[in-house]
Length: 475
Ligand SMILES: Cc1cc2nc3c(=O)[nH]c(=O)nc-3n(C[C@H](O)[C@H](O)[C@H](O)COP(=O)(O)OP(=O)(O)OC[C@H]3O[C@@H](n4cnc5c(N)ncnc54)[C@H](O)[C@@H]3O)c2cc1C
Ligand code: SF4
Image 1 (tube, rainbow, N blue to C red):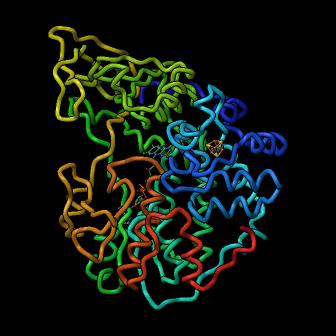
Image 2 (cartoon, helix red, strand yellow):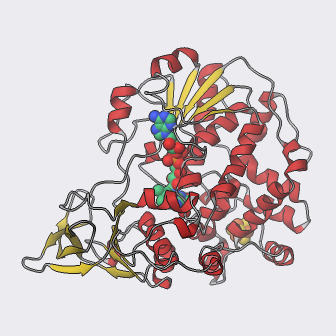
Image 3 (tube, helix red, strand yellow):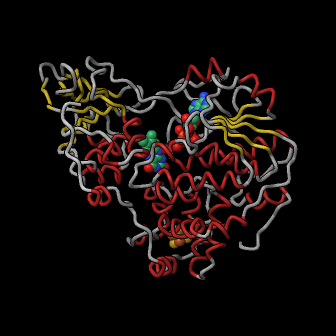
């Protein structure tokens, strides 16, 4: 990289990367919990993909029953801690809260959930007893990938007595929870606390183990009664323009990964940074580059603000951090001799809708211009792992390269189930957790014939009954 942004003081790094939604002080949490109307058939619960019984866990906060509250959350969503920190709550539970209809601030469900779950992990020595390894049922399941979908599937299967092993190619488990989520939302250390809970119920982890390379799929298939695939997505899409290989061009996932695992002052960032793409990952890359000390961060997007894929609240973070958006702008080539020196762009205009239904951007002739920069971050979304799925796993994909599944998340090979980003094309942590849980029930039904009501809301009670280790003194 030609020019590096000046280093900040430790205090500045700490301030810039502090929790974006700080925890509630206890008294405020109780006051907020008491505002809840404890609705019957609560819309907030319906809006949560994992169907946490939100009024029930909030009610328990009002009476100081923190065990019961945490238990209600974890019953439905074993990654309740990460979801409390990273969920787009305005589009899910809080967006559905009845207070919105009364022009009143919705209940701060995310922060209340965090209050409960932080208490659970802060008291781990005592609270871990709430979950015990189940009586073994003699069946084995392998999970490929160690992200949220697999953690969820493995946990709920382990509670049913399955011997579950997670195979993951990274050094540490947790998938994007450990390697991808913006540092001001959740640290890697926090993500690993949830892994500890999954490990605590007996799930085994094999790290640095890539299926298809270190372990053959045939062996896994022979040794397991079922397989869950939670491999997420692949590398960032290429720009496909000249200069892409110059030093100073990085992809967003690699940049964010460094941010999660290095000391902040050791992460290299340019003085003038251009981020290509305007999704949620682009916001994370742009804001974190700014918070690391970049003087100017420019986000280039070939459509307009109206078509931008990022959530509005994420966009607001980028604007607050004074990242500058160039709409209707596409990169044409990256300029530089030994490293990035600038980026040549072309102005765009919107044409007729393309296959995605959005207006297709078209270049405006002779509208090229150059933006000076010393770092380019590619953030055009992640590739699908089509080749791996078709050739190594031998499974069908859909026309968008996602693993093809039926309603029960069963793939074209009846022994294989799949969920999370590799199935939905890349959504949120909570969707991956919901998939993992649903796949666990489907696998259990296939192996034992026992149907664990997939459409009811409070299934984990049934799961524990089946596992004969029910311990519901807290609920
Ligand atoms: C930069 C970024 C920021 C995000 N921020 C948010 C956010 O703020 N809020 C939110 O809700 N969601 C966010 N998401 C989305 C969220 O992280 C994902 O939806 C979620 O992690 C998907 O979980 P998963 O289990 O499907 O896959 P992943 O988390 O991707 O995990 C897949 C795992 O499988 C492993 N793997 C792949 N192939 C193999 C193989 N052959 N053998 C062994 N292991 C393999 C990978 O190494 C990885 O560990 C973000 C995503 C990104 C990229
Ligand atoms: S919709 Fe709002 S008020 Fe009703 S239970 Fe949910 S959080 Fe409470």
